[in-house]
Image (cartoon, rainbow, N blue to C red):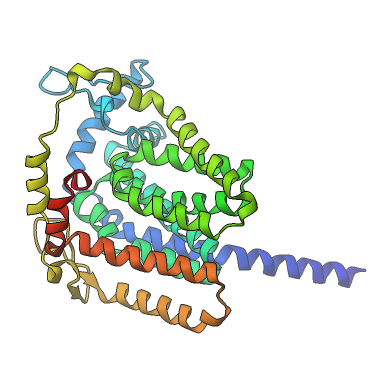
Length: 362
C-alpha cells in the first residue's frame, strides 16, 4: 500500500513539474526583459517616463484626498488642471497607485507596472500558444513575444505603460476568442468579457490596431468550429463585447457625454502625418546582433535572438506538420500571414493602400 502511495506521489510531482516549468521559463523571460531598467532604476531615459510620473503624482494626490477615481487632476497643468482620466486609460494608474500604496516610491511604482505588463505579456502569449499548439511550443511563443523588438521598444525606448499593457492583454484576447468557439460555455464567456474589459482599460486605441486581425481570427475560429455550436459561439462573443464595454463604462462613458469638449480630427492632416511615419522596408526588418534603436523613432533593429526563435518555431512546426490537424495548420497560417501583413503595413510599400483607404488609416 505504501509503495502505491509513493508511486502516486511521484506521479503527482512529475505532473506538477511538467505543468510548472514552462510557466517558470516564460516568467523568467518576462523578467529578463525588465533587467536593464531594474539594474539601473534611476538611469531610465524612456520617452514617457516623466509623463507617467507627473500624472501618478496627481492621481495619488486625489486618491489620498478621498477621490477614488479622479477624472481631473486640479493641481497640474500650471494650476489649470488636467482632465487625464477623462480620456487616458486608467489601468496603468490603478497599478502604479497600488504599488505606491504598498510602499514603493513613484519611480518604482512605474517600474512595477511595467513588470506586471511584461509578465502579463509572457503569460498571455504562452496561454495563447498552449491553446493553439501545446506547452512546449507555447514556451517558444512566449519567449519570442517578449523578445519582439517592437515590444521591447515600448519598454526600453518609449516606457509606455499603457501600450505595453495592451500588448500584454492582446494574446489573452485572441486566446479567449478561441476558447469561446471551442467550448461555448459560461467560463469562456467570463474569460472573453475580462479580456475585452482589460484591453479597453489598458489602451483602447490598440483595439483599432488589432481590430482587423481579431475579426479575421474570430471568423477563422468560427469556420473551424463545429456547426452545432457555431451560432452559440457567435452569441457569446457578441455578449462578451457588450459585457466588457458595460464593465468599463465608468471610463469611456463620461468622455462620450462631454461632446462639446471633444475636437473634430482633421482626417486629411492626420493621414499625411501617418504616411510620413512609414519606414523603408530595410529599416523595419534590419537585423543586428542586439536590439538597437538607431533613430528617434520607435522602429528598432531585429536581433539575432529573435530570428533564432522564429527559426526554432518553424522547425518545430515542420517536424510536427504530419501530426497537426487542419485546424492547427490554419491557425499557424493565420499568424504567419498576419505577421507579414503587419510588417508590410509599417513600410513605405503600403503608402498607396493607406491613401486609398483613408478611414482605415485613421
